[in-house]
Length: 320
Length: 320
Image (cartoon, chains in turn orange, brown):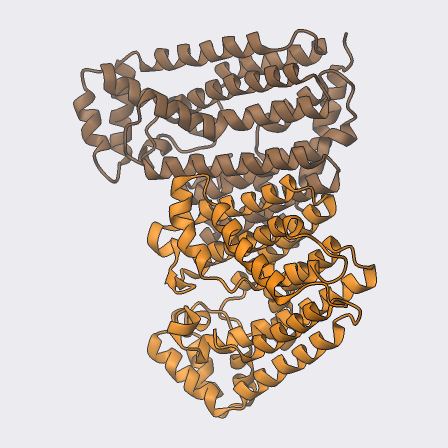
Protein backbone atom coordinates (compact mmCIF):
# COMPACT_ATOMS: atom_id res chain seq x y z
CA UNK A 1 0.00 0.00 0.00
CA UNK A 2 1.55 3.24 -1.12
CA UNK A 3 -1.13 5.87 -1.44
CA UNK A 4 0.94 8.99 -1.45
CA UNK A 5 4.17 9.88 -3.14
CA UNK A 6 7.12 12.09 -2.31
CA UNK A 7 5.72 14.54 -4.86
CA UNK A 8 2.42 14.69 -2.95
CA UNK A 9 4.29 15.59 0.22
CA UNK A 10 6.42 18.20 -1.50
CA UNK A 11 3.26 19.72 -2.93
CA UNK A 12 1.62 19.72 0.50
CA UNK A 13 4.59 21.50 2.00
CA UNK A 14 4.68 24.09 -0.76
CA UNK A 15 1.00 24.80 -0.20
CA UNK A 16 1.58 24.90 3.55
CA UNK A 17 4.11 27.71 3.14
CA UNK A 18 1.63 29.68 1.05
CA UNK A 19 -1.16 29.13 3.59
CA UNK A 20 1.06 30.14 6.50
CA UNK A 21 1.99 33.39 4.72
CA UNK A 22 -1.66 34.03 3.87
CA UNK A 23 -2.79 33.46 7.45
CA UNK A 24 -1.26 36.77 8.58
CA UNK A 25 -2.09 38.85 5.53
CA UNK A 26 -5.35 40.42 6.79
CA UNK A 27 -3.71 43.24 8.69
CA UNK A 28 -0.74 45.14 7.33
CA UNK A 29 1.13 45.56 10.60
CA UNK A 30 0.53 41.96 11.67
CA UNK A 31 1.83 40.85 8.28
CA UNK A 32 4.89 43.04 8.50
CA UNK A 33 5.98 41.67 11.85
CA UNK A 34 4.82 38.06 11.52
CA UNK A 35 6.17 37.21 8.08
CA UNK A 36 9.88 37.07 8.99
CA UNK A 37 9.01 35.25 12.20
CA UNK A 38 6.92 32.59 10.45
CA UNK A 39 9.51 31.97 7.74
CA UNK A 40 12.24 30.29 9.73
CA UNK A 41 10.50 27.28 11.30
CA UNK A 42 11.28 23.60 10.82
CA UNK A 43 7.55 22.95 10.30
CA UNK A 44 7.93 19.80 12.37
CA UNK A 45 4.42 20.07 13.85
CA UNK A 46 2.47 20.60 10.61
CA UNK A 47 4.61 18.00 8.82
CA UNK A 48 3.86 15.40 11.48
CA UNK A 49 0.18 16.24 11.25
CA UNK A 50 0.13 16.16 7.43
CA UNK A 51 1.94 12.82 7.31
CA UNK A 52 -0.41 11.22 9.82
CA UNK A 53 -3.41 12.78 8.05
CA UNK A 54 -2.23 11.05 4.88
CA UNK A 55 -1.41 7.76 6.56
CA UNK A 56 -4.36 5.64 5.48
CA UNK A 57 -7.63 6.76 4.03
CA UNK A 58 -6.55 9.34 1.57
CA UNK A 59 -7.22 12.73 3.06
CA UNK A 60 -7.08 15.61 0.57
CA UNK A 61 -4.61 18.45 1.15
CA UNK A 62 -7.56 20.88 1.10
CA UNK A 63 -8.96 19.11 4.13
CA UNK A 64 -5.64 18.85 5.95
CA UNK A 65 -3.85 22.13 5.26
CA UNK A 66 -5.85 24.62 7.38
CA UNK A 67 -5.29 22.52 10.50
CA UNK A 68 -1.60 22.10 9.60
CA UNK A 69 -1.37 25.89 9.39
CA UNK A 70 -3.25 26.27 12.69
CA UNK A 71 -0.71 24.00 14.42
CA UNK A 72 2.21 26.07 13.14
CA UNK A 73 0.45 29.27 14.26
CA UNK A 74 -0.15 27.88 17.76
CA UNK A 75 3.51 26.84 17.93
CA UNK A 76 4.67 30.27 16.76
CA UNK A 77 2.30 32.05 19.17
CA UNK A 78 3.68 30.07 22.07
CA UNK A 79 7.27 30.85 20.97
CA UNK A 80 6.43 34.54 20.77
CA UNK A 81 4.99 34.46 24.30
CA UNK A 82 7.87 32.33 25.60
CA UNK A 83 10.35 34.84 24.25
CA UNK A 84 8.71 37.46 26.47
CA UNK A 85 9.23 35.17 29.44
CA UNK A 86 12.80 34.38 28.54
CA UNK A 87 13.57 37.94 27.37
CA UNK A 88 15.16 36.11 24.44
CA UNK A 89 16.89 38.22 21.83
CA UNK A 90 16.99 35.79 18.92
CA UNK A 91 14.63 33.13 17.59
CA UNK A 92 14.74 31.26 14.30
CA UNK A 93 17.81 33.34 13.49
CA UNK A 94 15.97 36.67 13.63
CA UNK A 95 15.51 39.21 16.38
CA UNK A 96 12.54 38.32 18.64
CA UNK A 97 9.39 40.47 18.55
CA UNK A 98 9.90 41.09 22.21
CA UNK A 99 13.33 42.55 21.59
CA UNK A 100 12.31 44.49 18.46
CA UNK A 101 8.85 45.82 19.33
CA UNK A 102 8.59 45.36 23.11
CA UNK A 103 6.54 43.02 25.27
CA UNK A 104 3.29 44.82 24.45
CA UNK A 105 3.30 43.97 20.78
CA UNK A 106 4.66 40.49 21.43
CA UNK A 107 1.74 39.69 23.76
CA UNK A 108 -0.83 40.91 21.23
CA UNK A 109 0.73 39.27 18.20
CA UNK A 110 0.84 35.97 20.08
CA UNK A 111 -2.84 36.37 20.99
CA UNK A 112 -3.65 37.18 17.39
CA UNK A 113 -1.89 34.03 16.16
CA UNK A 114 -3.73 31.86 18.70
CA UNK A 115 -7.06 33.38 17.65
CA UNK A 116 -6.25 32.95 13.96
CA UNK A 117 -5.50 29.27 14.58
CA UNK A 118 -8.91 28.76 16.19
CA UNK A 119 -10.51 30.67 13.34
CA UNK A 120 -8.94 28.32 10.76
CA UNK A 121 -10.27 25.32 12.67
CA UNK A 122 -13.78 26.78 12.98
CA UNK A 123 -13.88 27.79 9.33
CA UNK A 124 -12.98 24.36 8.06
CA UNK A 125 -15.47 22.15 9.87
CA UNK A 126 -13.07 19.91 11.71
CA UNK A 127 -15.66 19.49 14.44
CA UNK A 128 -15.70 19.96 18.17
CA UNK A 129 -13.27 17.16 18.98
CA UNK A 130 -10.48 18.93 17.10
CA UNK A 131 -11.23 22.32 18.71
CA UNK A 132 -11.31 20.66 22.10
CA UNK A 133 -7.94 18.95 21.54
CA UNK A 134 -6.39 22.26 20.43
CA UNK A 135 -7.75 24.25 23.38
CA UNK A 136 -6.45 21.60 25.77
CA UNK A 137 -3.09 21.72 23.99
CA UNK A 138 -2.80 25.48 24.53
CA UNK A 139 -3.76 25.08 28.19
CA UNK A 140 -1.09 22.40 28.66
CA UNK A 141 1.55 24.58 27.02
CA UNK A 142 0.63 27.36 29.48
CA UNK A 143 0.71 25.09 32.50
CA UNK A 144 4.12 23.81 31.35
CA UNK A 145 5.55 27.28 31.00
CA UNK A 146 4.05 28.40 34.33
CA UNK A 147 5.62 25.39 36.05
CA UNK A 148 8.96 26.18 34.42
CA UNK A 149 8.72 29.83 35.35
CA UNK A 150 8.05 28.97 38.98
CA UNK A 151 11.05 26.65 39.19
CA UNK A 152 13.71 28.82 37.60
CA UNK A 153 17.21 28.18 38.97
CA UNK A 154 15.88 25.11 40.80
CA UNK A 155 17.44 21.79 39.83
CA UNK A 156 14.60 19.43 38.92
CA UNK A 157 14.59 15.71 39.59
CA UNK A 158 14.69 13.52 36.50
CA UNK A 159 10.96 12.93 36.69
CA UNK A 160 10.25 16.64 37.11
CA UNK A 161 12.40 17.27 34.05
CA UNK A 162 10.41 14.70 32.08
CA UNK A 163 7.10 16.19 33.17
CA UNK A 164 8.43 19.56 32.01
CA UNK A 165 9.52 18.44 28.54
CA UNK A 166 6.33 16.48 28.10
CA UNK A 167 4.20 19.60 28.72
CA UNK A 168 6.52 21.78 26.69
CA UNK A 169 7.16 19.64 23.61
CA UNK A 170 6.17 15.98 23.64
CA UNK A 171 2.48 16.61 24.22
CA UNK A 172 2.44 19.03 21.29
CA UNK A 173 4.09 16.61 18.84
CA UNK A 174 1.85 13.85 20.11
CA UNK A 175 -1.20 16.05 19.53
CA UNK A 176 -0.12 16.73 15.93
CA UNK A 177 0.09 12.99 15.26
CA UNK A 178 -3.20 12.34 17.06
CA UNK A 179 -4.99 15.00 15.04
CA UNK A 180 -3.56 13.57 11.83
CA UNK A 181 -4.85 10.14 12.79
CA UNK A 182 -8.29 11.59 13.59
CA UNK A 183 -8.52 13.50 10.30
CA UNK A 184 -7.45 10.34 8.43
CA UNK A 185 -10.22 8.49 10.27
CA UNK A 186 -7.85 5.79 11.52
CA UNK A 187 -8.98 3.22 14.03
CA UNK A 188 -8.67 4.29 17.66
CA UNK A 189 -5.74 2.00 18.39
CA UNK A 190 -3.78 3.36 15.42
CA UNK A 191 -4.51 6.94 16.52
CA UNK A 192 -3.13 6.06 19.96
CA UNK A 193 -0.03 4.48 18.42
CA UNK A 194 0.66 7.56 16.33
CA UNK A 195 0.15 9.72 19.43
CA UNK A 196 2.62 7.52 21.34
CA UNK A 197 5.13 7.86 18.49
CA UNK A 198 4.68 11.65 18.82
CA UNK A 199 5.27 11.60 22.57
CA UNK A 200 8.52 9.63 22.29
CA UNK A 201 9.65 11.74 19.37
CA UNK A 202 8.93 14.89 21.40
CA UNK A 203 10.88 13.71 24.44
CA UNK A 204 13.88 12.97 22.21
CA UNK A 205 13.43 16.26 20.38
CA UNK A 206 13.50 18.29 23.58
CA UNK A 207 16.49 16.45 25.03
CA UNK A 208 18.42 17.16 21.82
CA UNK A 209 17.24 20.76 21.98
CA UNK A 210 18.55 21.00 25.52
CA UNK A 211 21.92 19.67 24.33
CA UNK A 212 22.00 22.13 21.42
CA UNK A 213 21.44 24.96 23.90
CA UNK A 214 24.94 24.20 25.20
CA UNK A 215 26.71 22.65 22.23
CA UNK A 216 24.93 23.99 19.15
CA UNK A 217 26.33 26.61 16.79
CA UNK A 218 24.47 29.87 17.15
CA UNK A 219 24.40 30.59 13.42
CA UNK A 220 22.85 27.17 12.81
CA UNK A 221 20.43 26.88 15.75
CA UNK A 222 19.36 30.52 15.40
CA UNK A 223 19.41 30.89 19.19
CA UNK A 224 21.99 32.32 21.60
CA UNK A 225 24.20 29.75 23.35
CA UNK A 226 23.34 28.84 26.93
CA UNK A 227 20.05 30.72 26.77
CA UNK A 228 18.21 28.22 28.94
CA UNK A 229 20.86 28.25 31.66
CA UNK A 230 21.02 32.03 31.70
CA UNK A 231 17.26 32.14 32.03
CA UNK A 232 17.40 29.72 34.94
CA UNK A 233 15.99 26.70 33.09
CA UNK A 234 17.95 23.68 34.30
CA UNK A 235 17.96 20.91 31.71
CA UNK A 236 19.20 17.33 31.42
CA UNK A 237 22.90 18.01 30.62
CA UNK A 238 23.15 20.05 33.84
CA UNK A 239 21.12 17.60 35.89
CA UNK A 240 23.48 14.81 34.79
CA UNK A 241 26.67 16.82 35.27
CA UNK A 242 25.56 17.83 38.77
CA UNK A 243 24.98 14.22 39.71
CA UNK A 244 28.23 12.73 38.53
CA UNK A 245 30.72 15.52 37.78
CA UNK A 246 33.70 16.13 40.02
CA UNK A 247 33.29 19.88 39.45
CA UNK A 248 29.65 19.87 40.40
CA UNK A 249 30.31 22.31 43.26
CA UNK A 250 31.43 25.00 40.79
CA UNK A 251 28.37 24.27 38.71
CA UNK A 252 26.16 24.53 41.80
CA UNK A 253 27.69 27.91 42.63
CA UNK A 254 26.94 29.19 39.14
CA UNK A 255 23.35 28.01 39.45
CA UNK A 256 22.95 29.58 42.88
CA UNK A 257 23.06 33.04 41.33
CA UNK A 258 20.18 35.04 39.92
CA UNK A 259 22.16 36.14 36.90
CA UNK A 260 24.60 34.03 34.92
CA UNK A 261 27.25 35.66 32.74
CA UNK A 262 28.52 34.51 29.35
CA UNK A 263 31.82 33.49 30.93
CA UNK A 264 29.95 31.34 33.46
CA UNK A 265 27.98 29.71 30.64
CA UNK A 266 31.32 28.73 29.07
CA UNK A 267 32.53 27.36 32.42
CA UNK A 268 29.31 25.36 32.76
CA UNK A 269 29.77 23.98 29.25
CA UNK A 270 33.32 22.95 30.10
CA UNK A 271 32.18 21.19 33.28
CA UNK A 272 29.37 19.42 31.45
CA UNK A 273 31.80 18.30 28.74
CA UNK A 274 34.10 16.74 31.34
CA UNK A 275 31.31 14.38 32.35
CA UNK A 276 29.41 11.80 30.32
CA UNK A 277 26.42 14.15 30.17
CA UNK A 278 26.49 14.62 26.41
CA UNK A 279 26.62 10.90 25.75
CA UNK A 280 24.06 10.25 28.46
CA UNK A 281 21.60 12.71 26.89
CA UNK A 282 22.21 11.34 23.41
CA UNK A 283 21.61 7.79 24.63
CA UNK A 284 18.39 8.80 26.34
CA UNK A 285 17.22 10.58 23.21
CA UNK A 286 18.13 7.55 21.11
CA UNK A 287 16.15 5.25 23.37
CA UNK A 288 13.05 7.44 22.98
CA UNK A 289 13.51 7.36 19.22
CA UNK A 290 13.74 3.57 19.40
CA UNK A 291 10.38 3.56 21.23
CA UNK A 292 8.93 6.01 18.73
CA UNK A 293 9.74 3.68 15.85
CA UNK A 294 8.23 0.71 17.70
CA UNK A 295 4.94 2.53 18.13
CA UNK A 296 4.44 3.30 14.45
CA UNK A 297 1.44 1.30 13.20
CA UNK A 298 2.28 -1.34 10.61
CA UNK A 299 -0.63 -0.99 8.30
CA UNK A 300 -0.27 2.65 7.35
CA UNK A 301 0.89 3.98 4.01
CA UNK A 302 4.48 2.82 3.42
CA UNK A 303 5.89 6.14 2.29
CA UNK A 304 4.26 7.91 5.25
CA UNK A 305 5.78 5.37 7.62
CA UNK A 306 9.11 5.81 5.92
CA UNK A 307 8.89 9.59 6.33
CA UNK A 308 7.94 9.29 10.00
CA UNK A 309 10.97 7.06 10.52
CA UNK A 310 13.18 9.58 8.75
CA UNK A 311 11.85 12.33 11.01
CA UNK A 312 12.74 10.18 14.00
CA UNK A 313 16.30 9.89 12.70
CA UNK A 314 16.48 13.59 11.92
CA UNK A 315 15.44 14.46 15.46
CA UNK A 316 18.51 12.86 17.02
CA UNK A 317 20.99 13.71 14.28
CA UNK A 318 20.08 17.34 13.75
CA UNK A 319 22.25 20.30 14.58
CA UNK A 320 19.45 22.89 14.44
CA UNK B 1 -45.06 37.56 26.13
CA UNK B 2 -43.07 37.20 29.29
CA UNK B 3 -41.16 33.96 29.21
CA UNK B 4 -38.59 34.58 31.85
CA UNK B 5 -38.79 36.13 35.27
CA UNK B 6 -36.46 38.15 37.43
CA UNK B 7 -35.96 34.97 39.47
CA UNK B 8 -34.78 33.12 36.34
CA UNK B 9 -32.20 35.80 35.72
CA UNK B 10 -31.05 35.84 39.33
CA UNK B 11 -30.67 32.08 39.15
CA UNK B 12 -28.70 32.34 35.90
CA UNK B 13 -26.34 34.84 37.47
CA UNK B 14 -25.84 32.72 40.56
CA UNK B 15 -24.98 29.74 38.37
CA UNK B 16 -22.72 31.92 36.24
CA UNK B 17 -20.63 32.83 39.29
CA UNK B 18 -20.28 29.15 40.18
CA UNK B 19 -19.29 28.25 36.60
CA UNK B 20 -16.75 31.06 36.42
CA UNK B 21 -15.13 29.87 39.63
CA UNK B 22 -15.15 26.26 38.41
CA UNK B 23 -13.55 27.21 35.09
CA UNK B 24 -10.19 27.83 36.76
CA UNK B 25 -10.26 25.01 39.28
CA UNK B 26 -8.30 22.41 37.28
CA UNK B 27 -4.88 23.66 38.27
CA UNK B 28 -4.07 24.78 41.79
CA UNK B 29 -1.80 27.68 40.88
CA UNK B 30 -4.12 28.93 38.13
CA UNK B 31 -6.98 28.79 40.63
CA UNK B 32 -5.01 30.64 43.28
CA UNK B 33 -4.16 33.55 41.01
CA UNK B 34 -7.32 33.72 38.90
CA UNK B 35 -9.98 33.50 41.59
CA UNK B 36 -9.51 37.01 43.06
CA UNK B 37 -9.15 38.40 39.56
CA UNK B 38 -12.36 36.81 38.29
CA UNK B 39 -14.39 37.89 41.31
CA UNK B 40 -14.57 41.62 40.76
CA UNK B 41 -16.15 41.98 37.31
CA UNK B 42 -19.42 43.67 36.40
CA UNK B 43 -20.30 40.60 34.28
CA UNK B 44 -21.66 42.96 31.64
CA UNK B 45 -20.65 40.69 28.75
CA UNK B 46 -22.10 37.41 30.04
CA UNK B 47 -25.23 39.22 31.27
CA UNK B 48 -25.83 40.75 27.82
CA UNK B 49 -25.33 37.35 26.26
CA UNK B 50 -27.61 35.58 28.74
CA UNK B 51 -30.38 38.15 28.33
CA UNK B 52 -30.27 37.94 24.53
CA UNK B 53 -30.06 34.15 24.70
CA UNK B 54 -33.28 34.22 26.71
CA UNK B 55 -34.98 36.80 24.53
CA UNK B 56 -37.38 34.62 22.56
CA UNK B 57 -37.37 30.88 22.17
CA UNK B 58 -36.68 29.71 25.65
CA UNK B 59 -33.04 28.71 25.84
CA UNK B 60 -32.13 26.65 28.92
CA UNK B 61 -29.45 27.95 31.27
CA UNK B 62 -27.54 24.69 30.73
CA UNK B 63 -27.24 25.58 27.06
CA UNK B 64 -26.35 29.23 27.64
CA UNK B 65 -24.06 29.23 30.68
CA UNK B 66 -20.84 27.74 29.25
CA UNK B 67 -20.73 30.37 26.52
CA UNK B 68 -21.53 33.10 29.04
CA UNK B 69 -18.58 31.88 31.09
CA UNK B 70 -16.38 31.75 27.98
CA UNK B 71 -17.18 35.41 27.23
CA UNK B 72 -16.20 36.48 30.74
CA UNK B 73 -12.97 34.46 30.46
CA UNK B 74 -12.08 36.08 27.13
CA UNK B 75 -12.77 39.49 28.64
CA UNK B 76 -10.64 38.71 31.69
CA UNK B 77 -7.83 37.29 29.53
CA UNK B 78 -7.73 40.45 27.46
CA UNK B 79 -7.70 42.58 30.63
CA UNK B 80 -4.81 40.55 32.01
CA UNK B 81 -2.85 41.03 28.78
CA UNK B 82 -3.81 44.72 28.58
CA UNK B 83 -2.49 45.24 32.08
CA UNK B 84 0.90 44.04 30.86
CA UNK B 85 0.76 46.64 28.11
CA UNK B 86 -0.36 49.40 30.41
CA UNK B 87 1.89 48.27 33.28
CA UNK B 88 -1.28 48.83 35.32
CA UNK B 89 -1.04 48.30 39.06
CA UNK B 90 -4.70 47.87 39.91
CA UNK B 91 -7.68 46.25 38.20
CA UNK B 92 -11.10 45.45 39.58
CA UNK B 93 -9.83 46.88 42.86
CA UNK B 94 -7.09 44.29 43.27
CA UNK B 95 -3.41 44.29 42.37
CA UNK B 96 -2.87 43.23 38.71
CA UNK B 97 -1.23 39.88 37.95
CA UNK B 98 1.42 41.78 36.08
CA UNK B 99 2.30 43.78 39.16
CA UNK B 100 2.06 40.85 41.57
CA UNK B 101 3.60 37.96 39.60
CA UNK B 102 5.41 39.65 36.70
CA UNK B 103 4.70 39.81 32.98
CA UNK B 104 5.65 36.15 32.49
CA UNK B 105 2.84 34.75 34.57
CA UNK B 106 0.39 37.36 33.30
CA UNK B 107 1.05 36.33 29.68
CA UNK B 108 0.55 32.65 30.46
CA UNK B 109 -2.51 33.08 32.63
CA UNK B 110 -4.13 35.17 29.89
CA UNK B 111 -3.33 32.46 27.34
CA UNK B 112 -4.77 29.84 29.67
CA UNK B 113 -8.02 31.79 30.06
CA UNK B 114 -8.35 32.23 26.27
CA UNK B 115 -7.77 28.50 25.75
CA UNK B 116 -10.23 27.59 28.50
CA UNK B 117 -12.87 29.75 26.80
CA UNK B 118 -12.40 27.90 23.51
CA UNK B 119 -12.52 24.61 25.38
CA UNK B 120 -15.90 25.51 26.92
CA UNK B 121 -17.26 26.33 23.49
CA UNK B 122 -15.94 23.13 21.90
CA UNK B 123 -17.23 20.99 24.78
CA UNK B 124 -20.76 22.33 24.56
CA UNK B 125 -21.54 21.92 20.87
CA UNK B 126 -22.27 25.50 19.97
CA UNK B 127 -21.07 24.79 16.45
CA UNK B 128 -18.51 26.33 14.16
CA UNK B 129 -20.29 29.67 13.73
CA UNK B 130 -19.90 30.45 17.43
CA UNK B 131 -16.21 29.41 17.48
CA UNK B 132 -15.61 31.50 14.41
CA UNK B 133 -17.27 34.57 15.94
CA UNK B 134 -15.20 34.18 19.10
CA UNK B 135 -11.90 33.75 17.27
CA UNK B 136 -12.64 36.85 15.20
CA UNK B 137 -13.53 38.71 18.38
CA UNK B 138 -10.15 37.89 19.93
CA UNK B 139 -8.37 38.95 16.74
CA UNK B 140 -10.23 42.27 16.71
CA UNK B 141 -9.37 42.91 20.37
CA UNK B 142 -5.70 42.35 19.49
CA UNK B 143 -5.80 44.61 16.45
CA UNK B 144 -7.47 47.29 18.58
CA UNK B 145 -4.82 47.09 21.26
CA UNK B 146 -2.00 47.04 18.70
CA UNK B 147 -3.43 50.15 17.04
CA UNK B 148 -3.69 51.84 20.43
CA UNK B 149 -0.17 50.83 21.37
CA UNK B 150 1.23 52.27 18.14
CA UNK B 151 -0.50 55.61 18.66
CA UNK B 152 0.39 56.30 22.26
CA UNK B 153 0.70 60.00 23.07
CA UNK B 154 -0.75 60.82 19.64
CA UNK B 155 -4.01 62.79 19.65
CA UNK B 156 -6.51 60.85 17.51
CA UNK B 157 -9.15 62.43 15.33
CA UNK B 158 -12.71 61.83 16.44
CA UNK B 159 -13.14 59.08 13.87
CA UNK B 160 -9.88 57.42 14.91
CA UNK B 161 -11.11 57.55 18.51
CA UNK B 162 -14.37 55.89 17.48
CA UNK B 163 -12.57 53.17 15.55
CA UNK B 164 -10.48 52.57 18.65
CA UNK B 165 -13.38 52.25 21.09
CA UNK B 166 -15.28 50.10 18.63
CA UNK B 167 -12.42 47.58 18.43
CA UNK B 168 -11.78 47.77 22.16
CA UNK B 169 -15.30 47.61 23.60
CA UNK B 170 -18.27 48.08 21.29
CA UNK B 171 -17.47 45.12 19.06
CA UNK B 172 -17.20 42.89 22.14
CA UNK B 173 -20.57 43.95 23.60
CA UNK B 174 -22.12 43.66 20.16
CA UNK B 175 -20.70 40.14 19.82
CA UNK B 176 -22.21 39.12 23.17
CA UNK B 177 -25.65 40.27 22.00
CA UNK B 178 -25.19 38.63 18.59
CA UNK B 179 -24.20 35.31 20.15
CA UNK B 180 -27.22 35.49 22.45
CA UNK B 181 -29.48 36.06 19.47
CA UNK B 182 -27.90 33.12 17.63
CA UNK B 183 -28.24 30.76 20.58
CA UNK B 184 -31.88 31.86 20.98
CA UNK B 185 -32.38 31.09 17.28
CA UNK B 186 -33.82 34.53 16.56
CA UNK B 187 -34.47 35.66 13.04
CA UNK B 188 -31.50 37.21 11.29
CA UNK B 189 -32.87 40.74 11.43
CA UNK B 190 -33.47 40.49 15.17
CA UNK B 191 -29.93 39.18 15.68
CA UNK B 192 -28.64 42.21 13.77
CA UNK B 193 -30.78 44.55 15.85
CA UNK B 194 -29.47 43.08 19.08
CA UNK B 195 -25.92 43.37 17.72
CA UNK B 196 -26.55 47.03 16.84
CA UNK B 197 -27.90 47.62 20.35
CA UNK B 198 -24.64 46.12 21.64
CA UNK B 199 -22.50 48.36 19.46
CA UNK B 200 -24.20 51.56 20.59
CA UNK B 201 -24.16 50.39 24.19
CA UNK B 202 -20.44 49.67 23.87
CA UNK B 203 -19.59 53.07 22.42
CA UNK B 204 -21.45 54.74 25.29
CA UNK B 205 -19.83 52.41 27.79
CA UNK B 206 -16.32 53.24 26.64
CA UNK B 207 -16.95 56.99 26.52
CA UNK B 208 -18.18 56.83 30.13
CA UNK B 209 -15.16 54.70 31.01
CA UNK B 210 -12.90 57.32 29.52
CA UNK B 211 -14.63 59.98 31.63
CA UNK B 212 -14.31 57.86 34.76
CA UNK B 213 -10.59 57.59 34.11
CA UNK B 214 -10.40 61.31 34.89
CA UNK B 215 -13.35 61.92 37.19
CA UNK B 216 -14.08 58.59 38.86
CA UNK B 217 -13.30 57.72 42.45
CA UNK B 218 -10.44 55.26 42.66
CA UNK B 219 -12.02 53.21 45.45
CA UNK B 220 -15.19 52.83 43.37
CA UNK B 221 -13.77 52.31 39.86
CA UNK B 222 -11.02 50.02 41.18
CA UNK B 223 -8.51 51.70 38.86
CA UNK B 224 -5.92 54.44 39.39
CA UNK B 225 -6.97 57.96 38.30
CA UNK B 226 -5.63 59.22 34.97
CA UNK B 227 -4.23 55.80 34.08
CA UNK B 228 -5.05 56.18 30.38
CA UNK B 229 -3.42 59.59 30.10
CA UNK B 230 -0.31 58.44 31.94
CA UNK B 231 -0.08 55.47 29.59
CA UNK B 232 -0.38 57.78 26.58
CA UNK B 233 -3.92 56.80 25.62
CA UNK B 234 -5.65 59.99 24.52
CA UNK B 235 -9.41 59.77 24.97
CA UNK B 236 -12.48 61.86 24.22
CA UNK B 237 -12.34 64.28 27.19
CA UNK B 238 -8.82 65.28 26.14
CA UNK B 239 -9.67 65.42 22.45
CA UNK B 240 -12.53 67.79 23.23
CA UNK B 241 -10.57 69.94 25.69
CA UNK B 242 -7.75 70.31 23.16
CA UNK B 243 -10.15 71.49 20.52
CA UNK B 244 -12.01 74.12 22.49
CA UNK B 245 -10.15 74.88 25.72
CA UNK B 246 -8.30 78.14 26.23
CA UNK B 247 -5.58 76.25 28.12
CA UNK B 248 -5.09 73.72 25.39
CA UNK B 249 -1.42 74.74 24.99
CA UNK B 250 -0.63 73.60 28.54
CA UNK B 251 -2.48 70.36 27.83
CA UNK B 252 -0.50 69.91 24.61
CA UNK B 253 2.76 70.40 26.50
CA UNK B 254 1.77 67.72 29.01
CA UNK B 255 0.94 65.32 26.18
CA UNK B 256 4.20 66.05 24.37
CA UNK B 257 6.13 64.23 27.09
CA UNK B 258 6.90 60.54 27.33
CA UNK B 259 6.08 60.38 30.99
CA UNK B 260 3.23 62.18 32.74
CA UNK B 261 3.35 62.78 36.51
CA UNK B 262 0.47 62.63 38.98
CA UNK B 263 0.59 66.42 39.33
CA UNK B 264 0.28 66.79 35.57
CA UNK B 265 -2.70 64.45 35.57
CA UNK B 266 -4.36 66.78 38.09
CA UNK B 267 -3.54 69.79 35.90
CA UNK B 268 -5.01 68.01 32.89
CA UNK B 269 -8.16 67.21 34.86
CA UNK B 270 -8.46 70.86 35.86
CA UNK B 271 -8.08 72.01 32.24
CA UNK B 272 -10.62 69.48 31.02
CA UNK B 273 -13.07 70.59 33.71
CA UNK B 274 -12.79 74.21 32.58
CA UNK B 275 -14.18 73.21 29.18
CA UNK B 276 -17.49 71.60 28.25
CA UNK B 277 -15.69 68.27 27.71
CA UNK B 278 -17.48 66.42 30.50
CA UNK B 279 -20.90 67.50 29.30
CA UNK B 280 -19.89 66.87 25.70
CA UNK B 281 -18.83 63.31 26.48
CA UNK B 282 -21.97 62.69 28.54
CA UNK B 283 -24.15 63.96 25.71
CA UNK B 284 -22.40 61.79 23.18
CA UNK B 285 -22.77 58.75 25.44
CA UNK B 286 -26.45 59.56 25.96
CA UNK B 287 -27.04 59.78 22.23
CA UNK B 288 -25.53 56.33 21.73
CA UNK B 289 -27.76 54.99 24.48
CA UNK B 290 -30.73 56.56 22.71
CA UNK B 291 -29.75 54.67 19.55
CA UNK B 292 -29.21 51.47 21.52
CA UNK B 293 -32.77 51.62 22.86
CA UNK B 294 -34.13 52.26 19.36
CA UNK B 295 -32.44 49.14 18.02
CA UNK B 296 -33.97 46.77 20.54
CA UNK B 297 -36.36 44.42 18.72
CA UNK B 298 -40.01 44.83 19.73
CA UNK B 299 -41.10 41.25 19.73
CA UNK B 300 -38.68 39.85 22.28
CA UNK B 301 -39.53 38.80 25.81
CA UNK B 302 -40.73 41.85 27.73
CA UNK B 303 -38.67 41.32 30.85
CA UNK B 304 -35.54 40.76 28.75
CA UNK B 305 -36.22 43.97 26.86
CA UNK B 306 -36.79 45.75 30.12
CA UNK B 307 -33.48 44.46 31.50
CA UNK B 308 -31.60 45.49 28.35
CA UNK B 309 -33.07 48.99 28.71
CA UNK B 310 -32.02 49.09 32.35
CA UNK B 311 -28.49 48.12 31.34
CA UNK B 312 -28.49 50.97 28.83
CA UNK B 313 -29.43 53.37 31.63
CA UNK B 314 -26.87 51.89 33.98
CA UNK B 315 -24.11 52.38 31.42
CA UNK B 316 -24.47 56.16 31.39
CA UNK B 317 -25.33 56.62 35.05
CA UNK B 318 -22.69 54.39 36.56
CA UNK B 319 -19.76 55.53 38.67
CA UNK B 320 -17.77 52.27 38.37
